Image (cartoon, rainbow, N blue to C red; front, top):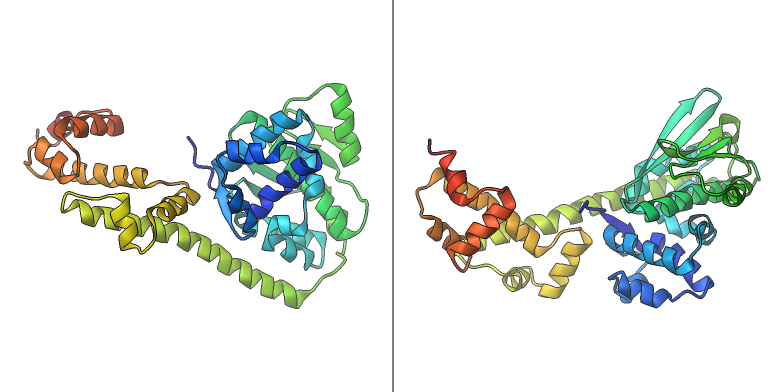
Length: 340
């Protein structure tokens, strides 16, 4: 399964607000998606992208609303974009604000990637969705583009419309097409290769309602630090756990509990933090075992049963099955390639 990264809690909450407003069984959807409801109480927190995708899919089914993506955008707040939203509010023009999307969108999550493309008198703002479920993808694209559209109107304090909307999902029945046109107040094309909004350059030059250069500089510095912390957090825990696994395997014994004790946290906290990064203890253990097994098979004459023992397997058969599942080859065939 593709690693979908993370989603910030503010990005998740717009969907929760929509569900609560329409009296859906929100709590059931949250729990069935595998999300701890307490996690949603921390607006500085994150959840795995796979869990967010699962939640959206369950809400789509519960709502039975083919326009849920458009309608959830009505529950977007500046905080839904984390610090990025406040950065955009402090810009002097709509163009300045839009140019701040791509550099800081990872603070909102790993749901997609934004790019800007000049098109003569217009600018195409494209968004490539990273989520893989076709149903979720359609509603998320609708949500992001309609959220941008509504937020831009609010920032600019004017009812100017886009030139054209491009959506990659197939054209729906005409009644729904009419609703898309009414929402965006412009031409909407379906079945496109990429999704995005074509905006006239004159609209991009619109001054915003509350520019603040001093605050903008402070917010951008804060955002840069947050991005650095995100990258550091992702590197630090996985690297530390991997290093501990490798060191412990040299004595033939390792476990999640031993690693957690070494890091002065509970094994449950260790697992939760790894899950937040889209990893697990078992995945890291398998990665290290494969690396160490490959090295020993290529560069030593140790018996395969001894290698299995050194890597903490209960017996040679367990190691044999695992190694073949990782590489498609048995340990013996793998070694033969380097001993000819």
